[in-house]
Amino acid sequence: MAVVAPSILSADFGNLARDVADVLDKGADWIHVDVMDGHFVPNLTIGPPVVAAVRRHAMDAFLDVHLMIERPDASVQAYRDAGASQITVHAEACVHLHRSIQAVQATGAKVGVALNPHTHESVLEYVLDELDLVLIMSVNPGFGGQSLIESIFPKIERLRRKIDQRGLRTLIEVDGGVKVDNADRFTSAGAHVLVSGSGIYGAPDRAAAIQVLKSA
Image (tube, rainbow, N blue to C red):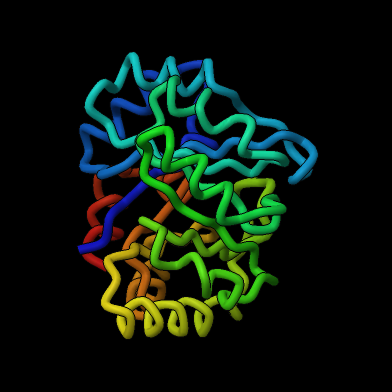
């Protein structure tokens, strides 16, 4: 079964504690937190205080924090201190990617690296063994509710083959355009974790949407 990670980018921020608890109660595995700085991506979202607030209201939740920010090394400890279980940095934002991975590992959090749609998975050749997760962006990062980019499916397949060939346990996560009617395409290509914002929070029956994604 797939791991389902609702993105709180699509939640009601005026009732964030309620919306986080709601999807967890309805079967979500992780909570995905999209952090944007208005520089690396053209949008500004949340910082460590909001992550800390989510942690206070969801003490046992796995908080999957996705940093779409410049100079992530300077911020990873703050997000870990706020309650992040896993911290994912963008390969495109890291001048020294291996050093950034080490910075996350030093906090005690699980570590992921995200790749924008145009970035080839070969950039991970020398760091793949260090990673708990690779996040494949299936839309250009910065905004929720976008349509997926079809060309990412061969990319997921190639990455999954590489992980399997090396005998690694690295998870593949996908983020962008994931809905109940296409989830099986991502898992068939080799994804393990499905991030969905509007596909869950905008669904008329959130529990049903989560279960469809889980069984993809």
